[in-house]
Image 1: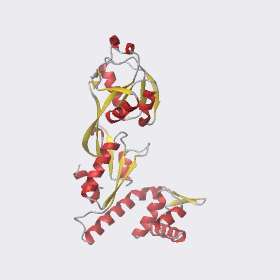
Image 2: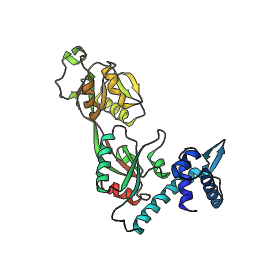
Image 3: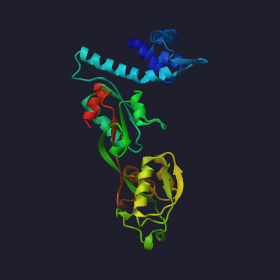
Image 4: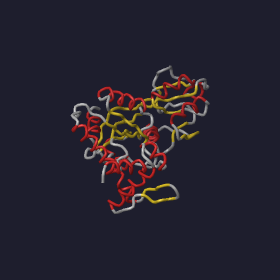
Length: 296
């Protein structure tokens, strides 16, 4: 087994056609096929089902993906040491985000990391909808996952790096009568969760951690609300508020942006917030992954 075969295997496992993979790797399609078949013969198992002109991973193939990715990362680290660049890391670091709304913090963290280690390429992917952090780390899809969580909920190693606060966004121009006692709070004045306007709620889908945190805070305060619209994309919440479909509890950064579209925003009391940070498995972190986590 050589690294070229592993590279071929991982490229094809990514789901692209053989022709596309061959073009991306600058090899011929027959050479790519021979490399895959040679790896299968060496391991004594079929890694792909041949379906029409395509390839689909077998159970053995799926089991190999994680170790193969770890092998490639270890090889890159060893190469750096061999050529005397251990003090100037290079290569690629894969991270995933399971936390919608953290684009800003993630971008700043990646920018800081790249400023310190400019020879490292960082690839940021989205956590698949049905996957857990444990699954993507185990199969080697990434080394670090950005997520919302109370730290004691994770079986992985975790590091809290910030807090995301949620503000109330209300359509501008709503009748003052929707507010308790008919009095709208002044701009920037905190709104009590027990004195919310009489408007339906526009929110994200029920399974999201943001929705769970918001509903838990409302329930604890004894607030009664009703949903008007559920959205799968949290970036679209502001547009629905602006259209007059109701109020929303939004990440502060998104809420502040929604002001330009005609929303009025208020902090809430008690505050609604979610910790965010990273999850990782210290046993499988590459040297680049360790540099990233240690720098947080």
